Length: 576
Image (cartoon, rainbow, N blue to C red):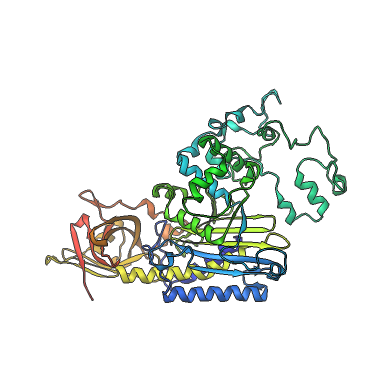
């Protein structure tokens, strides 16, 4: 998704661009309350029609602003799914697009047309299911536990090979945690797989590299390609007497916890840990914990753990159901999901972080926009490529599955197109719905001269346009408290906290916090940081926060009042 980040940033910047030089410093997370996403929404309908048009154009031309595709050989399926309130979440997907390449139509395959039910190999996306099962079984407390707690035999792998451990040659198993396996932070080697098939310039060389052991009995010689000849004393034994013995022959790439290094070996070990915890074969655990509860027809791995981290099969429909279940916390407590959908470490790309095992793209461009994190994972194996993305801030996600008759296809173009079209539409809907549901004037009903007016504009979050408390312009009070000389330059923007309590008759109370800034000053004195989170809950009166605003919402999702507890105010919305 290297190109996707650029695209999504551009669209976000364009949507939130303002002629004002003021730079809001929002809190991390959704800038507006949760959407209601209906299929008949004019904004959504227009965006989906545009999305179909973009895919049609990309296929017909074979290229576009985001790069090239291979329409003659690549068949693919795309889906969008939602867990928002509204009709878009009634089905597994609210949009799908399928393309069947001529090479598939003319092949001997039983599949004649790509569809929701077409089965694709999803490769490394299997690792999401490994993590999911681990969280279901043990919660995330297991992340800090050493792998040797569950597989003590790993601790003695290198004993007898060398008198003393060699940090360069021997994996430090005692200091690798389960969480480091799940986040690719263990420093373990990758493993042997068919990555070379896409890059090796010769089929003979490909065969030599794929075995990762020796060239005995193979056509061609390693020497012909500048490789040393096979040596039985140095080659890896691919058929050891015990399953873990092959790991003793592997050297680390980095120390544990230092830098993310993609490793299928780490997930092979995680598979063994799951079996050790449950006392069941991994296939059975996968079926009983995830596939059956979600009524998924997706196939479990067809191999043992040496390939299980790459070998699930799925359909676009099933993968969408799984994505919705993660967003909806269907199989986990919500607090657990909140922690799962967070970064573990940075990468060398400042817009790109790693999770369990998410590849997280921050699709924002501070100080121009708020950040929108997209939790993705993608994989290419053999002639298949799979891609999933979850956007918790908008409770939506996408999936793309593809197969090619020549080599694994690149799906970055497809993800780019989705981000280019859908994110701006969601942002536009969020702003309009927030204005319709929460915007307006709220006044005291007891004759007290207190009121507040809430509005929306092109910037993240709702803003407080006017604020009177007991006859006093409270914006002036707030300005003086934070050292803003000109009260008109005070920005008071409201952001949802995610705290919601249900009330009777389908209503609710929704909590917001205000971020106060001086519009005449650059955010954070011109430095490229945003530290408004350090000032939240700082101003208090009688122990109650002055930046706390709790809205009363009726069953139609319309705000009918707001509580500002520090000022002992209960304001009712004025009907217009």
